Amino acid sequence: MATATQGSFVGRSAATVTDNAKFNKVVTKTATDYYMTGSEMSSDGFIVESAGDTKLTFTGGGQVAASAVTAKTLYEIGVSRVSGSGTVHLVF
Image (tube, rainbow, N blue to C red; front, side, top):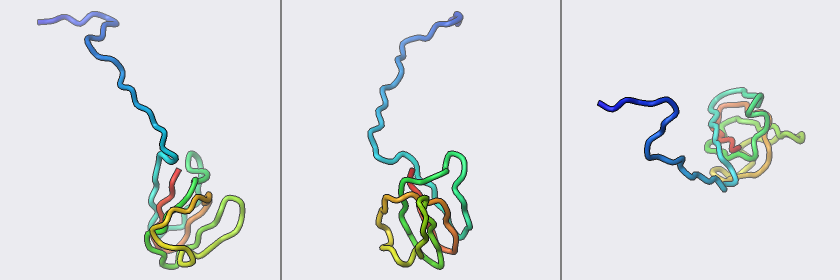
């Protein structure tokens, strides 16, 4: 039986992972009244899957009904609040 010694690591190196994607996280909100806080303080964009009566409030001000935008299209504008019955994917 092999004996482990302190501080030894056998035969492996750290994986080389590079991330050059424009976005790296998606959060989905459905039928909610959600204010972005903490690590989700401001999204980089959004995709409306289904509008319902959802309203989107933007980080720089202003609000729009989700039904006013084309569904399943990425819009690169920061959202600070999602409210209503639809489904919205927030990208970060």
